[in-house]
Image 1 (spheres, helix red, strand yellow):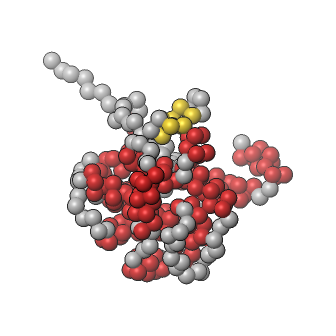
Image 2 (cartoon, one colour):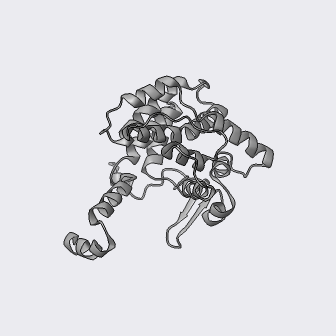
Image 3 (cartoon, one colour):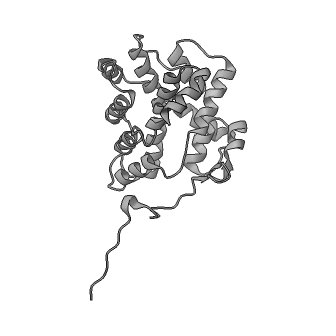
Length: 251
């Protein structure tokens, strides 16, 4: 007796996993992290507290948040060889390709080398979250002909990113806006890059390999790269007066 074999092209309609971390209600325009609405988190939380919530499935106490924030701020600086690696990249290289390369190299400098431990994975994730802004800012500074600017431990996550990009301390409201933007983008469900990271992690590879692979997926023009296409479109249009003519031509 033969059994018919079926498949779902592109995994369409296949439920690959379940999650309690994030819920996207596209019909009603709602986004939830661990049961909390994004509106409440954007108003009442900040990036560091939201990161704790996503990692540990609960909001931290004051003491827990202080310890967590201290660990994040201690992890911001880059080792000198990492800085020199970034400096050596050609200025015309795409930032996402550079970011993927740097993240792989960062694993050589992680202090917590024990693999496949929940505690180790959380510490490694925290280390990555802390260093990503420093890597991104350093990439941009070198591409702009500027030198490496070490992070500041007295600034919030968002304010520190702006400081490293600009070279001057941002106004309080500017740091707050950046922090809210980071909260809004902290978790967007089981998308292509998350799926990629999970596939790599399922082989018992390292957190750094998983995130590096996820960045490669995010780079694609049908995923995170779509934002870049939008910016290119806006630059091409030039002004709002030219928008209608541009759309008519595109259609």
